[in-house]
Length: 86
Image (cartoon, rainbow, N blue to C red; front, side, top):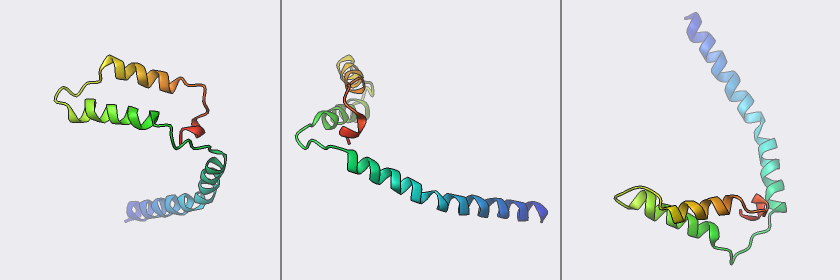
């Protein structure tokens, strides 16, 4: 019974602390949204995700081709701030 009570208190403390940090998380998300510049015509991330989906998840082989891996590495090494990609 003592272990059950201790676990219940531990669970309640985790729950209460997890609710208090949501304001800071929401504040951070709003800050990212206001500073982001979205280019509607830029389809590079969508094309990479489409290639990944077709090669890794839909194909029987389930492996990425070298061309797609190079595209992913190039995209990840862009000097553009990551908030512009959102």
